Length: 166
Image (tube, rainbow, N blue to C red; front, side):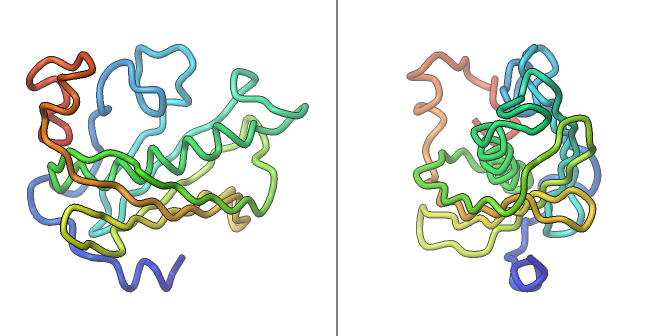
């Protein structure tokens, strides 16, 4: 991940350093009103987005470890959080996940993401999920920029997703 961070693209000046608000109250990854959410708390550190969270039995796959789907969801959520400093509405079109180690429940995990490339409407985002020095999983996502109307077509109200400019 260090190589990826060194080659990250700038995230601009629209959102300052420090903690982010949730994407919206019921967001699966970070929403405080969603009872299934691991409530990932994201913050900006330069051109890197870092999230911390702890999973519990709601997120369990095999006994004592997280389900692979929630691990992938955390990587997707971190990828989408790169959009907040950019104030850019976009959606996931591809997410490649490589699992390296089980994610144990009841441990603080860190998910880190960087914008590693951009071609027109496509954004390339790299992520890594760690437990201390142990890499749990890495991800490479492709997001595509959309208009606010895309989200409104599916039920968002104008301004509801202001965290990404929609």
